[in-house]
Image (cartoon, each protein chain N blue to C red):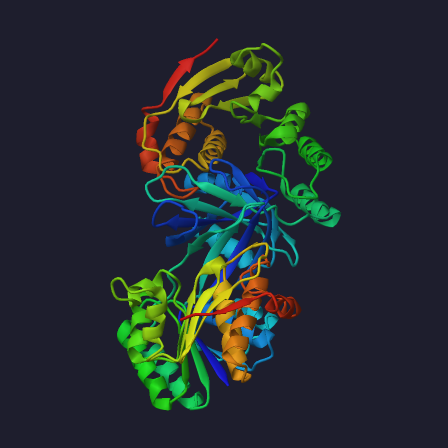
Length: 307
Length: 307
């Protein structure tokens, strides 16, 4: 079983404008849509879409829980959250201008979690997760969830002996590396914080794979540099028309872990994950991709052995 | 009794950013607040604040009715709406950047009203409004409410014989002028559409007052040019620090009609209304003003006889 943990979930409110956003003008909305904003939820979506059983864990505000649950249901995502009573799951506003690529993102900080909330989450994880399972921790941490809490969470999972995947950044990523998790996916900026002065990117990845089973450095449209044991690959992305690249990395992570769960090889997992996220960026929202498109795109993903 | 009619109500969602709005960046929210966005509702707020009894009429979506009612209750506004079943009252997004004056407005079009909805509203108006009452029609018209519907509404009110005030623009304003209502408040751009080629502003106002009892041309920070019978005044606004000028005109209209209902003179009604809106622009939201501040500011409002 794969579990995803989203500590700081978000409901994305996608505001599609009729035109370019302009000050001192009434900017008319063409349409509004709702989507998942939490990175762990995005991962769950990709896994479910690829037919791999998974359960979304984490926190969830009660005052707008039905709204979040409605989107999760539409996306086919099973979940078992710790309720944060009397507070809403934060909303993010994603402003999408007509005929302009990229988006404008406005986010709330979200509720603060208490010691009690955290203990309920830890209890749930201890009760559910077993040694043969995979756990993905993805996204930011809410107010009240500190690095020491992340350390405790990683310690708990290490004790269980499951496969630990982390899609984190900043101090949280460093904590995951120090704990020696099984999977990380830093981007080209985040990897710099993990390298020593003057070290090449390949050498940094090689160094990291000594303690971390899978290291994926995402390089946006350029692809990714990936290491596992003694295998190192530069993966190239097929050329596609980018409509919205939000959530592309989350789609990669979900698809990759789903493939590992299906006992696919490292290279097959990498090429499918790359293809799924290449399908994703052609969609308007933050999660959707097409499995058949991805299977076609997978043949166009390039794999070059490195080092 | 004063009735306000808001045909196309809005709930304003005020998004206060921690900083300037920037693309390709996570723009953090400092806080969120909700306010009334409908011009008629703004008028009702000013009347209630000045202690003048009034009732807000118009349409209201049912799916988020409790949200709108909560704000109306907080603002002390009595209402009796025609419900538009299964649809939400539209929301507008008002983005307010830190230390930057003005705002960025994003609006929905809102629900479409049916012939049945319109007949329910007309029945309610016929049942409630009497000859000695005042009716303010303010703001835009929703999809499905056409100029011919506005003509019917004005005909109905003319038949009752009440005082008709209109804060409308474009074709709707022209329709109100043609019907010969009792009060209009065009801004400096809208008045141009009512004037004949080469005519001075004062002459246009003089011409309009032949058929319309009260004509107020709002000139933003410069004040207003006002006509009633044979009295014409240039009103000057006291200097204040403008925080948010949204809703200033609505505050003027509500305060002015409240003063008329209290049998104040034309000049007293003008100076208080000007002072109330000068207090309003010093507040962050779209409605609030302080009555004591307004009474102090009223002494600083300048009145110059014209023509």
